[in-house]
Image 1 (tube, rainbow, N blue to C red):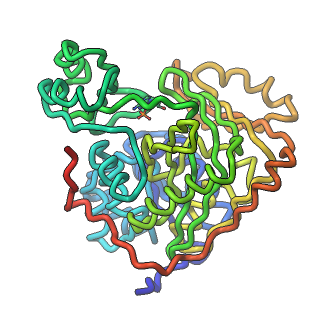
Image 2 (cartoon, rainbow, N blue to C red):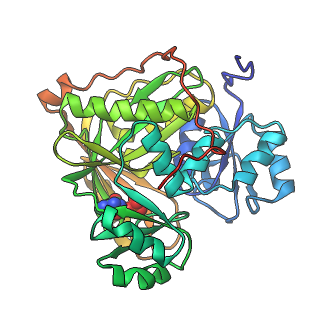
Length: 393
Ligand code: AMP
């Protein structure tokens, strides 16, 4: 059934849950399209609120703030995946549509549900086992192998809440070190490199994928992205196959970041999915005609998706902590496009901004690069129901 509220005309209002740098860059993209933004965040003076029409400073479960947001916004989206499910339900009950929807949030908030969903969707992952106690680790190790990576099921990010287990005798200490909370034990991915694909799905089912990017992490935090990655058409096609399955089965609307392990033999394993714009997609701001932020706004507003063909190759480097103090030198460099987030204090490791350094595409990158949005595929497929969990062990 067509939702007659969409496409939202210019002058409409997009609500964003979260006030960080992703919300800020979404708000800037929305402004370019003539759309207003209202932010809901518990933090005063957030990066996103500095560039948005209005900010509600309140906890995400504050009923008055949610009622005000629902009254103002024509659609509500989010810039982080740990939005409480109750917030989305409350907004929907108040008549405000949210995108992406609850299926995507449910799978992205729980690493076990996420991997079970991915495998059911034909997206391979490492072997894994749910862990409720230390005995589960010992029981799973013969199948998972050593070393194995123990991660909290919920709320881990940037490598936090994870520890390598090198023997069954380490199980109890490892679990205690991540807080004794419900966890997942993962097999070690013997990857050759880390890639990601940024993909979008519109309200009409249209899908658009950017070229793969290659990502280098340090201490669990993204340091640099190179895009387009050196990848064969077959590898790009496999990433797009995975993205298409995931987006369609979640009945997804918006941009998603999919982190991949490249095993070097043509196999891509999904590490995780982020139901939002993604740090490894920041290169698109200076690399593509329509960047991931505009693409997300287009999708949630029901507009046609934009062209994701790269015009240049980009090296994106995060500015962490006091690296952002080099802004004057960076501003002098003609090849560096500087993006700063308006954050006050450059605490160690804090993402303060990023730099995109652009270069002409190599001839083989041009040949492989045209990727206009694909029209909706009129194939019936099952939409994932977060209430029905497949067996995971
Ligand atoms: P995550 O928080 O799950 O994104 O993990 C952060 C980083 O840890 C990834 O970017 C990888 O470098 C590494 N990592 C995560 N899971 C695995 C795994 N199963 N095997 C090997 N490395 C991993």
